[in-house]
Length: 86
Image (cartoon, rainbow, N blue to C red; front, top):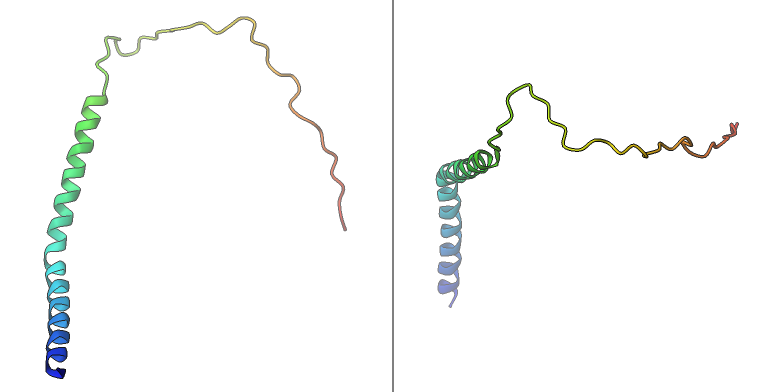
């Protein structure tokens, strides 16, 4: 009974250390691969987002003129008089 328990504990400890060792060994390669995949996806999205503009460089286009009846607010806000506390 006790021998089986000790054997099980040793197996668990062995597999824990083996897993840690293998994780330290292979984790950098796996992380590098994942980062490269993410970078490729980001580059692909960036390439697809760039619009192909027919406007020449330096040319200005105005889509909509500003409204003539737009009035600015002349009151900025309420004035608050603060008192100094000694």
